[in-house]
Each structure stands twice: as C-alpha cells, then as structure tokens.
Image (cartoon, rainbow over all chains, first blue to last red; front, side, top):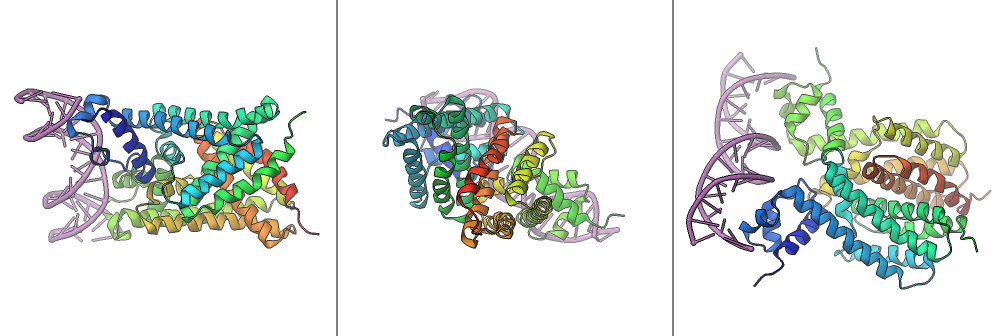
Length: 192
Length: 192
DNA sequence: GTCTATATTCGGATAGAC
DNA sequence: GTCTATCCGAATATAGAC
C-alpha cells in the first residue's frame, strides 16, 4: 500500500548521506533504510545514484528552508529570532535527532571537484538558507547589502559550527556562535 | 633512491582526501599519486587505509598549525594578524593550490559516525589550530576564557567559510569572515 | 622493502520476467 | 511498478616470492 516510494528513498538518502557521506552510502542501504522495494530504484531514478543524491539535496534544501522560516517567524526581532534558531539547533543536535542540513556540507566536500551538478545544487541550498536570514534582517530595517552579507555569514558560521560539533560530539560551538551574533549585529546597524 | 616513501604516501593521501573525500579515495590512487612502490603500502601501514588516513590527519594538523603560527607572527596585533591570515587563505584558495585543512572537515563529516579513531584525531587538529589563535590573542592581552572562546570561533568560521567557498567556487565567504572579525574583537576587549 | 597474484567483498548498473 | 538474476569493475586486504 505504499504510495510514496520515491519520497521514502529521497528521505532515507538524505539521512544516510548525513551519516556516512555520499560515496559511503550504498544503494543497498538506501533500499533497506527506506523500506522501498528493491526493484523500484531504477524505475524512479533512471540516472542512478547521482540523481537520488540530487533530489535528496533539493529535498533537504526545502525542508531546512521552511524550518528556518518557521523558527524565525517566532520572534519579531531578527537577532533574537536567529539566536533562538541557532540555540534550538544546538538542542536538537544534542538530542541526537538533529537534522540541520549537514548532508549538504558533506556532499560539497566530497563532490565539489567531481560532480558539477551536485555542487550546484548544494550551492543553491546554501543560497536559499542564507536568504531566509537575509529576509528577516531586511524586515528589521537592515539595508539590502548589509542583510545579504550578514545572511551568508550566519549560514557560514552555522555550517562551520556543525562540523565542529560533529568533531567534538557536543554542540558548544553552536552556542558560541549564538553568543557572537549580537556583536556582529550591533556593528551592522539597520538604518532607521 | 627513495627514502621517504611513507611521507610521500601520507602527503598524497591528505591531498586526495581533500579532493574526493576519505571513502572516495582508493589505495590505488594513493599509490599512483604518491609515486610510492605498490608493494610498500602494507609494509608502512600494516593497518591499511584507516591508518594512512590517521597519519594524514596528524600530518595535516601539523602543517596547518605551523603555517598559522608563521602567518600570525608577521603582525603584532592579533586582529590584523588573523585578518591577514584569513585574507591570505582566500588568495590561496583562488590561486587554486589552496591547502587549508579541508581534509579534516571532509573526514569529520564522513567518519564522525563510523570511526571514533579518525574523529578524535580530527578533533585534535581543530583544537591545535584554535589554540594558535588563542595564543595570539593572549599575547595581546585577552583573558584566557575570552581568548579560548574567540580562538575556537575563528577556527569554526574559517572551516564554514571554506565549505562555502567550495560550494561557490570563489572565496568571497572567507573575505567576509575577515570583514566580520573586527566586530567580534571589539566586543571581547582585552583587559588592559 | 618491494613485488605479484589472488582472495573476497562490494559497488552501481542492466536485462528481462512478472 | 516491482522483482530476480547477473554483469562488471573496483575496492581493501592477504600470501608468499624476491
């Protein structure tokens, strides 16, 4: 009675990439983890593994993007909202079932020099997330240029902190990023 | 007349991991790229691929650490020195022959959940680099706690910016990090 | 220290039945 | 849409000669 075989595969792939990387994730595992029928993979994804990863990136991009959007909507003030988001990410990281776009960073490092297609889609994911931050900043009166720069820096810091958190097995780096945000914000004041 | 087969292998591995990740790097390629004799791999590294990667991490850690040290020594002022280092990293990134510790981030994302040994050695590398920044800050009068926090944040930002730079195929993210540094520094003033 | 040969497992992918 | 069987290449690792 399964209707969403394709979605299941995409979801499972995103998770697996986050765990063991792109190359390290086998089609066999994807089938097992997704519960999808073995024979269905090449029906849904005629171009094989790369296509699955590509769609997993697009899926991750959207999931994270809308998650950021929701979280930021909870507070009017941009600084408070973004800080809360980062702190919340830290909590989720420690509760183990984090899912904060790590597969994108993993894919970039693995495939930046081997698959232009994947690299591009990862680039777009980062762009989309940065833009969510940017939009929030603009809504708080920040100039376009400042908001854009700040938005990308925030995304960059979060990605770096996630890698560090994985290395350290704890989320202190994310919390430190949250602490540093006010300092940057104060210097790029919105023009009232 | 080769004397440093082992070092050649380690070096080549570090480069290859940076390019295609840990899983994506084959022993075959390591032999080819290093110019090492085919039969020598398991003589020098009885425990196989993981051992090679482990030593590549340690090697990378040291190379980058001493590089940071040298660069930071060029200016007395911590902010100026660290900014110069980041800007210099951006230049090297764009000149294509960058080598700034990317393999560590790649390894973390790939093996954090599969090899404790590798994860730990990566953690130590990040620690070593952060400490170089920290030492510089302390020499400029920053308190230990502030210096430590700042040092790790700087390393985190650089790693995030490198991933972003790989995604974007340009080093703007690194330059932006350099721009943001003064804002953070000003808020965590050294106690005179 | 270095070599070749080989064992073994596993990867992604295809063909063709149902 | 899904299945099984199978191909082919590549991977790491081992054994044993030189």
